[in-house]
Length: 420
Image (cartoon, rainbow, N blue to C red; front, side, top):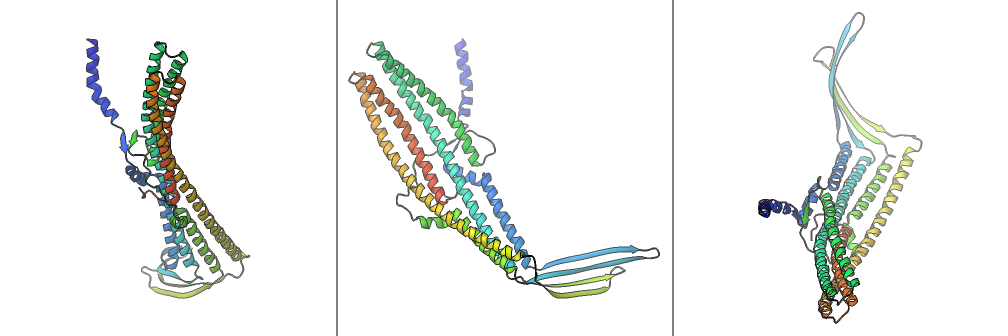
């Protein structure tokens, strides 16, 4: 009666367990790209930085347009014997005529600052893509490692069963049995460790997706590297669109316009003004006034201020020029290094795959030989250990190839829109 009761409970609640087991969200690489592009805080910050620079450019450009004001005034003055009212309203405006191209240079510098911010957004996007891909691959690897660990547990379990049978038959010594039991325990530990690691990398991926809360998820994909770049590319051509280089170039251009702006300080500033006003002691006022004029401003002595500002701007330009050259050199070296690393990683996968195939074949042969007593335990267990290690090494090699591929794509400056 009691076993039947437990069976009934299991049947009733089994659908719930099935629902919970299937509740994990499965994401493809395309899903991850789309979500991170929309939600990642680093990208949101970079977008707002671009918006700030665009607004700063508009602020600077406003100086080329007429500046107008409307004035309205009502006042009352009282003495011991009289009280007087005063009313006035009017409009006035000024227009910059000439400032030695200072404002136009500042506008051009602001445009370059916008370009620098846009390049910085691309750089942030490339960094997010690298981190996202790394988290995706790590979770893919963690999921696969659980499967590999389960295979290793089965190998160790079968080995232990065979050795125990031979030990009980008097064909094997106790040391072999204890070794098999230790290997089986180690395999179970590694399986438990692999399962615990899955949740950690799930949290990594959740962060890189830009999610505010942790959610249990899985990823769907394979370990095929698609960006192989077998033929060595033209690195000098690749750096032309690299966001780091574009950012440094924009900063250099902005600094050059800063020099022009500082030079313009030595020229006079010419502006025109005009205004019209009505005033009187009663409302509406009926006294008309107007004015128009041109003003010229040229500082004669400011303690070397303009000279110092010009020297400062030129130094800033030379610094930006050196930074751009340094950035180009760093990017070229990074491209060379990551391309070579990618080729090494891809070839490593091929080598480890061949090693795995060889280990599997040797294991099949050795299994039969050990069962019939043709080889000793010490020789056989070495072959089994080699198989176990080959399985893990092959998975490591596959994951490393995908991570190196992601680093190569990031070195090229590709953003989240790049989805091979």
